Image 1: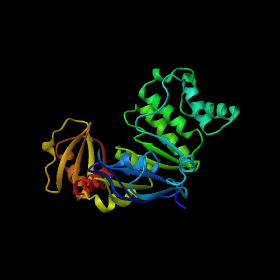
Image 2: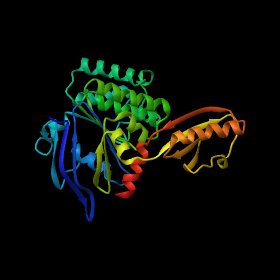
Image 3: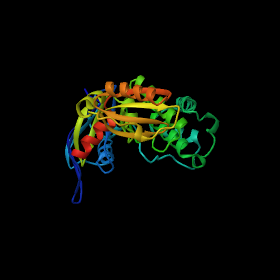
Length: 305
């Protein structure tokens, strides 16, 4: 039995078809990434899977339960963190968590204990008695996550969970995703952060114009659709793009204090750069090669589709 089994989903709004014959299968215990450009249909699919919207056609099973036939049973297996949090600004951090725990039928002792555990886990203990409306975006997002994980749900939906967060808040969110997954929760994640998806997900589906155009592991997607390697190098001295002139180099980009040199022959480029550095008396601070990226595969798929 899969955590999610959705077959032939379609959803239109007037003359616009937002989701067109989409099928998704998510294995229990996996971290499933759902990627796509803006307007591709990601959020509509999540709303269908979580029962917010009803599909025009198709079926959805959550942990074996048909969400259309028994929506309450299906939703009790979920934790949902929407892109825009739904926490109560006029309640404190602790009150938000305890209020959510009540909906899941937890007794007073259990919900208070659970609230303290989650507040500590998300670094919010010192702010537990403050009204959420006084929190920053990152802290409000942490409260959204806290409320979603109160019942330790078997299935956790996260729609752009780290969008706009500072480094510290983002790290706490990522750590929480890992902890929930290690404890047995299946994670369904949408994100615009391609490297985040590459680092977190075991399987990725890419949607474009309402249709699934590819589903595979990140490495297999890179292998199948990515073609370009690059060499990244940093010199102690200041150099210009004019330094990188070789027929094996397809393009050059400035990348912070480094240069990225794209090529199909990284071995040749590394040797060429060593020769150039020797010739021009340049000191190399760092040099590294990289294979095809998930971002390249994503761009190729969504531009072609």
